[in-house]
Image (cartoon, rainbow, N blue to C red; front, top):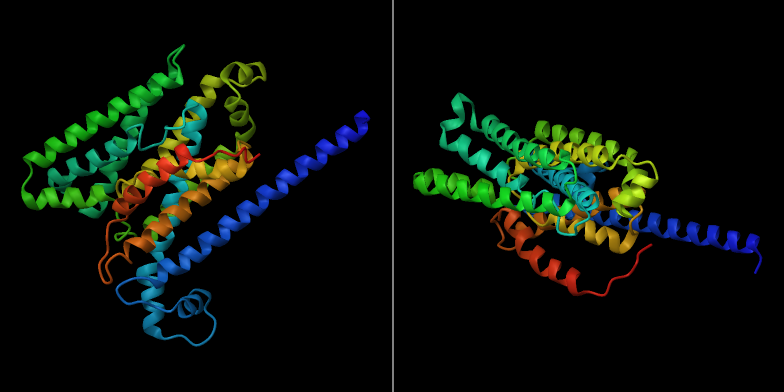
Amino acid sequence: MTSASKHAGAIADHRRRERRRWRALALFALATSVSLVLDVATGPSLLPPGEVLRSLTGLGERAEMTDSIVRQLRLPMALMALSVGAALGAGGAQMQTILDNPMASPYTLGMAAAAGFGAALVLALGGLGLDAMIAVPIGAFVFSMLAALFLFALASMRRMRGDTIILGGIALLFLFQSLLSLIQFLSSPELSQQILFWLFGSLSKATWPTFWLTTAVTALCGALLLRDSWKLAALRMGETRAASLGVDVRRLRMKTLVIVAVMTATATSFVGVIGFVGLVAPHIARMGIGEDQRFLLPMSMLCGALILSAASVLSKSIVPGALFPVGIVTAIVGVPFLLWLIFAPRGTGR
């Protein structure tokens, strides 16, 4: 075989892989759209998916009550599930990339626990003179960013390895969980119940303003991460090789940590602590896409959006008329799914 034919064969293989990746992205985008419609359709008053589609598209004859339920009550929550899931999926994928650890995610690095502690502290202090709908997200965001600052400090130290940052994040996780338990122990039963409900993670308080803010931050941060896709792909091959290709590893790690922290802190500040999405979604994305960061990032966002949207549907279907916190559902479903990912045969997906 001549070198020209080998070159042509390599190009053909590369194009086949890219077509397969685009098909995987399209399939997950379609599944996410279906899940969105089902999420809007499910609830205390079950709506036919056909009516939901007509209400969403504005086509055909529609009942005024159906339009009100769909557009004002259920659609903000359903879209918030997609936005938060995409943020957590992207955050988990990039944490795993820059730290070279499959267990890295905003949850395991303590940022979610810090957000929970911040929300609980604000509730315990009576909202600091602000309305709870405003004070709780602010407290969650501030403490999540404080946890991220600690990780930034670790990442900025010379000769600081990714494993050390992981250990620092686990230390933060236990610290904030202990402080949170202390606040609950000292609180009244009513306040403790408020804190517990927020910690479960819930989409029920989603509004159009909080959705647009979360989506804008997620889209901006996702675009910034996508700009560094080649550098992140080089880092995935190892720090030494990335440095030999001209990548400033410390600067890239710091920049990515900042972007992920802002994105995930914004998302969790409005919906509470939601685990396993940022951990599991990147692994699903890699199974179908591989390590090419140009495709891994959008695929991780789609997987995260689909997981949280499907969890939202399930949370409203367990007991008809009741609404379970979505964080409980992701935890129950996430543990066996994560075990399956650990023991399942792995394909390259490349």
